Image (cartoon, rainbow, N blue to C red; front, side, top):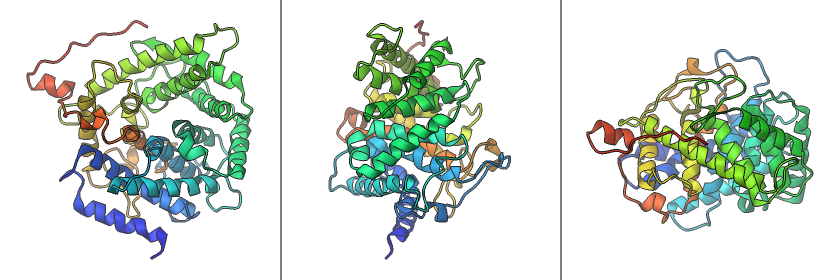
Length: 411
């Protein structure tokens, strides 16, 4: 049987058995992650993603080159599952899934930058590639030994060249500043030539846009949406963490600025994580507001990142966070219509709701939902997975149980 048909059998099998009927939370998470990832990586590993991906564009699509869809699907998916693929191989069913995805991913990374491949991504047209190049760079930062180091020298050279030529793009003064900052931070970590100005200018502006109590404005004007989750909090903390770990000194700053600023940004993200957890209703839903709601579980990325990096605040026990995330995951993916007939995500929030899509959205964009899977990078015996499930804050509050009072932070 041809490899490209294997995922169809697995997709049908997983759909028939149902996730929520049996097994642990981790099994539910890993099976869902595998289901989401398989159509993208099984095809791209053979250079067939652009041929076989069933594209869906927003009804208000702005006319940009639709080939950006493939880069969005691959980059966003890999950023979310990179920690999971960094775990060592084992003989469990999950281990076999993980090994297969890693093998596909490594081949897909090579196709992404090979000009002779049908799946050479849209690196050199449009401005959108800057966004998803940052996701690819972030995936390397999250799993360098498993996803970057195994690549052959030519593929690495190609990535460095593609990342550096993205300096042609002048990002708007919004969350976009964090995309070149992330790319340049990866180049720094890889020992390649990098542009510190693009890193430092992003840090300066993000600090200017901090509005208090764990929230940043997305540019000069505050918008009540989830871009703190999708981009600002996780990418800002990641950039600062690399600078702090490498003891990089920023011009006109004290020697320990990066370390101190990372600690501050992490504390803000912890506060934001507390707010996100309190937004999860007793029924496992959360408020739908702002743009890009088709990114689905990407809303919960800060909680997932804090869990994976073992940085959850003391107010959030691991079993409580896992229970909340699992409840939302099951609530959303129990709805019919999240996947099309080829197994790719389709436009919507819970199910197929194409008119919810913004003018820049295609179904490749939706793979930002994979960011919720970051805790799969913790081994199965980690307390995040073994701690007893606990009711989350809203469930406690609305059942008449005791729950902690909330308070703002001042930093």
